Image (tube, rainbow, N blue to C red):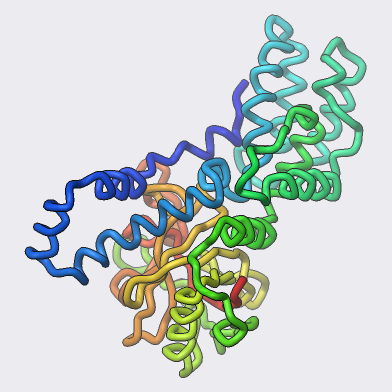
Length: 364
């Protein structure tokens, strides 16, 4: 038996944090040497993104940075699975039922089957399985939402420690949390941004004059699934407003004034819904260098293949586009999964980034 939640969210090696720390500890002479060699602005461009990411990680908390929108079911999993393993040790009949429950919550393929998970929990009630690990009968989405809000209320203050999740270390609450957190990218983005701001965030005055009300950036989309090259396709392509350049400058002014930006995005190879134009995901933009914007992705395991949770958006003035592609050459994505080829993931760019196209923005 294993924890799918834990396995799918590998620990982040955090190379930018290490780089920022090393730079912070470097003698002044080293920085002066860099400045003489490449100039003050080049040094600032190099150090800035690392330092901002390190600060963002610190203020939102190492747990949120590592697990994102799967924060609480991930932490519960760390405590629950050792107890599950102990409860079913040398009990093959119990182990088989627990495996059925897990297959409903985290299927190897296809949609999650919560009815199957519920049936497995009901079956365990008439066995020697510990009642405290079963939890309540109700594991609906609404239960997960209530637990999520309770725990986030305790976690929202960056001066406090991580909330106690032990009351929820049972199958029912874990299932409910996993069910809710799967769809909680927007809510998580809002809460993580709030914790960042509460900790001091990016400074500034956060004046009303630099705030951005919800603003739609995309006028229309078209979808081209024709494949070319090595399993590449354009997929859903957004057409942006002619005012995109001005909106990008508004984003910079807002960030300079201490705001963070909640961006809704078209995710992967296709947008959502029958129209393929519906936004499906939220990210938090917290910094920039030039026309590249740094963001945190609450879906930490699905952001890119190189690291978890952090990457950049790029304003490509030539293509009039705000996306994870720095240029037209990097915009296409893989059309299919190839499990045997590392990084060959449907909806990911060749550079290893899960493609996002920003659909709308607002400050938080």
